[in-house]
Image (cartoon, rainbow, N blue to C red; front, side, top):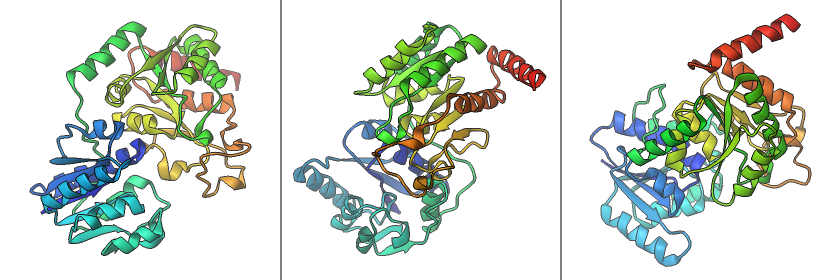
Length: 353
């Protein structure tokens, strides 16, 4: 069987689809799997994946780019497509490519219900569960067996690992990743609060903080670093794969519901995630030990998912609430340096109580 995955972007959504790719290659080892992804950084993330046999870059900015991609996909003669995105732009690609079996979610689980018209096989799915599990519902309908283990088949190079090693040498010890950036206004926590967290990590645990940032986010990362009083916050720019390699060495990740958080989750990094308009249950880290800090006292958060807001009350998260989550998560971490400091901190809290 020749199967095409359609998940054009974004970073977090692609990460949530990778366990489905892995399940297909594991459950149907003779299946040839292609992936249609939009041109840009997400394409670079998937390049070289051991589970992708054919990668198709779709330039959505021009008709010619879309036409060229569709022609290549049509010539590949896929038997079935799985549309994990649920948008008109994702559903139209396998339709134009004349793939005979076009699978996707049922109308009530599609981001754009009209896209379901272009499918000829719709699968019922619970849109309130974690998106990884929702995606696996589509895989099981192939049918294809799945397991409870999530794999993220991303190929890292020696250069990616070398980058992580250089940064680790620079900090000379355990480090935290604080990632203040986010594509939505409703995912941004105050930069000065990140600075307070960086100071506290250094003063109480001797842990430096790497303030990571992507393109166009340096000003935000620099604001965090300059607001920290201890000079233990260091700005770091990286590619997605470099970030993934770096995350594997981090003591903890603190940041919002963005691509870097999902990369850190795939790396197995301990996580404290900060949630605003999106749902931690649906989009959060999947390790039961990881923690999400969010507000439950706002009616407007229910099914919000707004990118912008007049008040952004959902991201008015107290520093103490975030710090409490960090200490609880760190207490479960095994590291040659930090656990003693964390354990001592927890014992002091118990004494004061």
